[in-house]
Amino acid sequence: MNVLATPQSASSTAKPAEHFDVLIVGAGISGIGSAYHLTRQLPDKSFVILESQESFGGTWLTHKYPGIRSDSDLHTFGYRFKPWVGPPIATSDEIKSYMGEVIAENDLGKHIRYKHRIERASWSSATNLWTIEAVRTDSGEPMNFTANFLWMCQGYYRHSRGYTPQWPDMDKFKGRIVHPQLWPEDIELRDKKVVVIGSGATAATLIPAIAGKCAHVTMLQRSPTYFRVGRNAIELAETLRQLQVKEEWIHEIVRRKILFDQDAFTRRCIAEPEQVKKELISQITAVLGPDYDVEKHFTPKYRPWRQRIAFVPDADLFLGIKSGKASVVTDEIDRFTEKGILLKSGQELEADIVVTATGFDLCVLGDIAFSIDGKPLNFGDTVTYRGMMFTGVPNMVWVFGYFRASWTLRTDLVADFVCRLLAHMKEKGAKKVVPALRPEDHNMPLLSWIDPENFNPGYMMRNMNLLPKRGDKPEWQHSQDYWAEKDEIPAIDLDDAAFVYD
Ligand SMILES: Cc1cc2nc3c(=O)[nH]c(=O)nc-3n(C[C@H](O)[C@H](O)[C@H](O)COP(=O)(O)OP(=O)(O)OC[C@H]3O[C@@H](n4cnc5c(N)ncnc54)[C@H](O)[C@@H]3O)c2cc1C
Image (cartoon, rainbow, N blue to C red; front, side, top):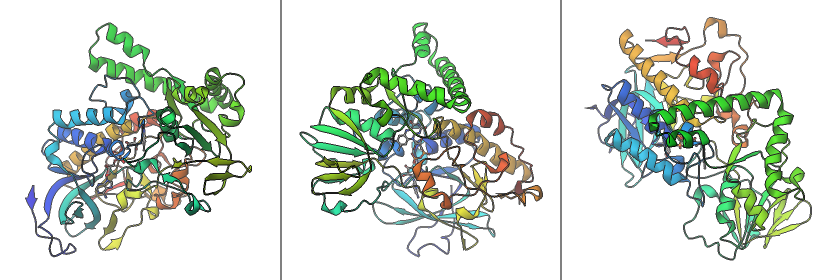
């Protein structure tokens, strides 16, 4: 670490800027995984992780609602380098303790600066450096850094608040409205009527967790969602454990099996969506019985796989419904009333507590004000290079994981790419790399970041204009296809004309 002069744009009271080769934004699962790979692959690089929260975990630290757990298996959501030894669906505490072990085992703690919120990042072509202006969230002290390379692991949504649509007369409601992302510690559920608005993974997790603790919980959904039901265990892992196979091997074998099965499932979703739909819904009918109106409440209108399919371990959501402690209402909200929610059908749902499990507030690159040589950067004006880099933006990579497969599979792949790129730059003596459209790309149609026909969750659709553009060639797309990218990313030709070095 070097100490440089205070950058001109920073506050005059700020300490001199500290310099690092690489600055990682965020200590979530992506930031910690990226730091691990950097220390292993390029041990000579100096680096720091800046994290605005008081600890590591990101998503798993922010979300504290009852029952919070993963919806994908931890063999693939865990890193490729550290075996996952627990049940496949994990609680946030289990995920944090796994990440804590990665930090401790690899001595990463000394590189992390908590309570550092980055507010500005400015690139200077004169120095080929990023200047990062952060503020300490405890003292308000400005902290300045310079870095050759920015590794953006800030996730994709705003941690400080969730997305709550505005419905008429919300202010008239006498009860409490809570977003799961800001779950209050003091909330008392006993004897309370709770309505959870939403039907995604959050609702599916929260409802079984509180069903036995409140008077009744209702899942209020505008339209149904797909779920998969199964035991929270992987038979192959159990068998291999019985055979006393080493955990490292079990992790690798089970990962391969899960990924193989997921690929086959995706292909089936595309080839025979109606059959897959039937199978998914029949799992639910099997629990709820033939008299339950599965057609109305659990038969989605979209094709499976356009949105992530949440896994419901041990069918707990459906068992809660079957027991009568939880119920589902499929309707639209007309307005709030003093006592609850009036639905378009005319029914009034009484509630003491309304939980808005209505999703995220998409946040592009951590609410950081970026500029390049003094000019503000709008990511919506850039074109994405494989969902990792952006045209015109030097020395920066964004780790944006998979939606359908586990996010972290891409963290590992992107980390290998970054390390290869940094090593290549050193070899070439380059201080700067910036993605640029090649001559053959100039008339390429520019489309929205993600094809809504392929994947269309609400938080993406609401904010597509904020995200970089996509082209019609693989280089300029974020494919969301692990099976293609696991071979394509390692094979990227770093001397392709899409990379301009200086
Ligand atoms: C409840 C829930 C369950 C999920 N379950 C799964 C699952 O089972 N499988 C799956 O694949 N995905 C799941 N996801 C998606 C999940 O967000 C990602 O998989 C993954 O955890 C994202 O990790 P990340 O490190 O990239 O980002 P995050 O977890 O969002 O962490 C980013 C970190 O960066 C910090 N940060 C952001 N901006 C700044 C700034 N300006 N300055 C300093 N620090 C900053 C944040 O404080 C945060 O700690 C889930 C999401 C939620 C909300």
